Amino acid sequence: MTQLNLSALSSLSAAVTGPAYDPAAVEVGIVHFGPGAFFRAHQAAYVDALLAKDARWGICGVSLHSSGVRDALISQDGLYTLAVLDEEISYRVIGALREVLVAPEDREAVFERLTRPDVRVVTSTVTEKGYCLAADFTLDFSHPDIAHDLAHPQAPKSFVGYVVEGLRRRKQNGQTPFTLIPCDNLPDNGKRLKAAVVALAAKQDAMLADWIAAHLTCPCTMVDSITPATDDALRTRVSEATGLDDNWPIQREAFTQWVIEAHACEGGPDWAGVGVTLTDNVPAFERAKLRLLNGPHSSLAYIGSLKGYETVYDAMQDAELAGFVRTLMLEDIAPLLEAPAGMDLPGYCEAILKRFRNPAIRHLLSQIAWDGSQKLPIRILASLSEALAQGRDISRFCLPLAAWMRFVIGKTRRNEAITDPLAGKLSDIARTCDDSAGDVTKFLTLGEVFPASLVASATFRAGLEAAYDQCLTFNAEAATA
Image (cartoon, rainbow, N blue to C red):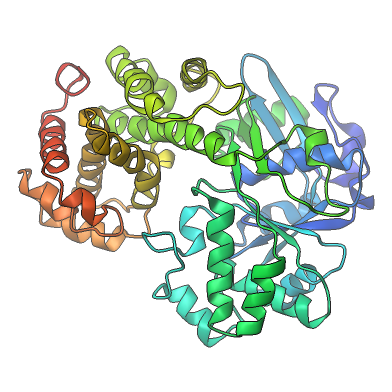
């Protein structure tokens, strides 16, 4: 079968949409850190539409660790197929990713891109853990990568380290900073990323830190689209639809949303022209999405896994579990939120539930369950803390937390790897657990997850112990009633 690449574009099936521009003529104007599945399904698709009108915004992807994306796409000239799987299924070849660099192998090439005058935007999807922040969302100077970058600032390992060194070189060259746009599920992501960049720079050069603080634009954002991992079934489906061999196609649902804080970027991309929402109230969009979509997603991941389900769709076929999630959204989370202008929160909840029930999307609960120690404080504990402060019932919030503890214990007892930055600590705790209420106390020693104020709350501790007891004898009637 013919390989997908630039020369094969002319032979695309009529059922497949190709780039509405010549990818070979595109200039690189965006550097993106973390060219994984979500980025290629989401931001790169927006840029693909942008390139049809403005060829300046091709993307140089930078992987901080793995060479997988580069190795898969190099023979394809950076092209890949995006399968949109919903009530209607469509296929589109994305040509926006013009280059992929692996930072440890191509460090100076990365800095060459970061200091190009034509590069005006740097974006990132490095996951919450990739920003190297502590529990209070400030830069964690004890993180091994940050400690390395302090000792070797011109040979960094962390994303923040690359940003600081790239900006140092731009300042040295008399250039203006690029606009820095983080695209991960981190509350106030722009503010926190800029603060981290300034904090690391301040340890190296006070004048550089002042320059960054004064001139770097780093807007807050919210991104949303369900993007399951690629599997062999998708490769087969894409191959049959396109007639081409694609090493790494990507899939997502039809729904996609990108919200960026309104900002000045002279001569920058026309984001609004390709459907990006520019707003002065990103936090309202962000909280609605993180808490009403990501929080229930994590709840389904941990509770659903305990009940033996494999995918979100499977879990949503359990009427009791689906009802629990719906009640959590409408009765517990939504009352805590400010609705962004034009958003009907109950309607938004029902739309999310419909997305969860999409049979065309096979979103593995095991994938959503990754990095729970980083995600749960943002997705569940933030809402729980507000509900507790307002004297509201927190019992439903406690169930996904308890299910996460049982999930960790189960993985440890089965000798299965835990995908989490705290995997070592979690396994150590799990090995001491004996299925008693004392297990909860052991998990609550994780200061990286549970704030001291919550740990000190008798109401929280009692609610979590009750939920943990439910999970020990898990069944639909007891746990989701």
